[in-house]
Length: 449
Image 1: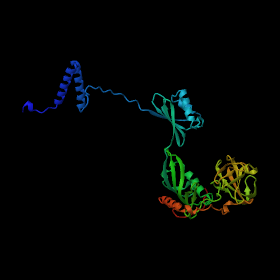
Image 2 (image 1 turned 90 degrees about the vertical axis):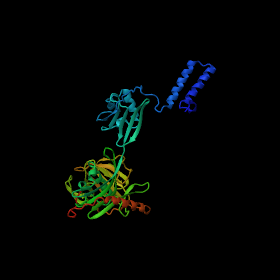
Image 3 (image 1 turned 180 degrees about the vertical axis):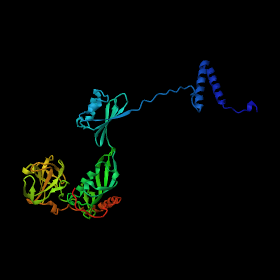
Image 4 (image 1 turned 90 degrees about the horizontal axis):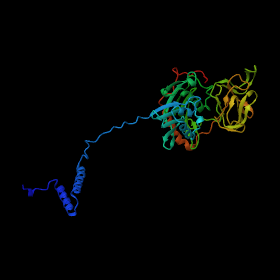
């Protein structure tokens, strides 16, 4: 093949460009040295653009910069007699920094109100004051403090909550408080069941006298919805369904909340468990019942005992057995500290020998059923801590244990369909445990709690 027949090679275009550039230089008089520089620069850029690998990196030096050490977190606890400022001082904060931090905290809670046991988490470099602080405001919220150039930024965070369902059953051998438990017992926290006992007694307080009616061989099973904090402590609890076998009869309790109403309990047919009056103001043993002739341990003689005595520890909360208006609150002779409440239908109740009377409990004040009106004591003519409870109708003393106290109205018809659906789902939860029975299936004598 002749050279004149050869096709242009891959560099043909490049050469033609150089010729054109030189011709331009000759025409306009550009110095040859400048032309050379321009040509070399142009070729260098063009070559870099053509290259698949980019600039030559063989002579690039790699420099390794060590990463800063990770921040460290330490925990501290407010001790008895210690202030928040003293805790911060112990972690290297300057007086001005402590002042600034306390002022930010004060927007959420007075520093004087922090109780011993409050936990702080301080995070930052090991050799300087923390740059982030988590401060426990209460059991359910934390105050987050982050340092900024302009000062400390603050934000309240809610402690995450886990919701679960717990199903338990219990067989009563000596008392409700010491029932033989089955079901998901391993998930119970320390002393958690004791709280459920009080709740259970409250639910059936209008139907069962737990101080007199509970027998050996009685049993219960419950489904409970719990809210748990990350440390395992209980934030809230509520029953989803209850069955109680008492003296051979099985009582059920299903909760239901009317729109904009309170949570109440009903039986499987929608009849209210709640009564107009509670059976007792404290869920403890009756130590002396209603009697026309009783030997008085202080006066050393026989006389009528027109009330019911409940032996309970000093300081036990005393609840109003029904809604009403306070007609007396203070010290009254042998009653000691006492509260008297007027109810409907000409009924009055009295609560005597109290160690203290609740805040706001004064003549003319309105109280709700179950509201705490005072605490058990031994004031007045008393030999030890107990509550003396009286029930009067039209001025005459009556024995509430033998009275047929009326119940609250049944669930309204418009809520029945919704209630029944919830009832069936709740009872299904109970099916995972059986209602226990004694091995001999015998019901024993009555026991008191």
